Image (cartoon, rainbow, N blue to C red; front, side, top):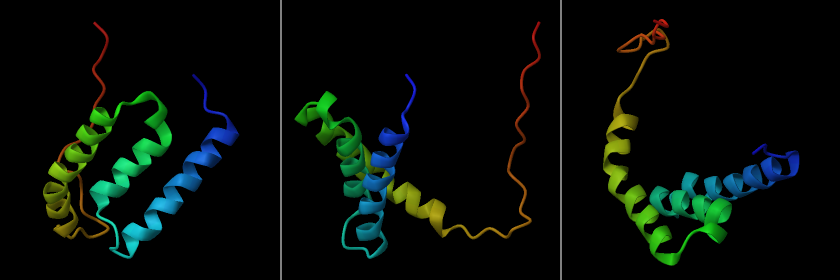
Length: 88
C-alpha cells in the first residue's frame, strides 16, 4: 500500500506534535511513542493492544538511555559491516 502525500503530512504533523513535549521532558518517551502509534494505527488496535505497546516502549526505555549515553565521534566506525549474501 502506497502512502499518499496527505497521509505522510498527517504522520509528520503527529510526530512533530509529540516530539515537542518529549524534548521538554514533560512527557515520557514511552508515552510519546505509544501516542504516535495510537495516532497512526489506533483505529486498528484494541485498548489492550495499545497498553501492551505502551508497556513495550516503557520496558525498552532503560536500554535506549544506555544507548544514548554512549558518545560517538564523527569518525567512529560501525561494529560490523553489512554484506549482502550472494545468490547460490
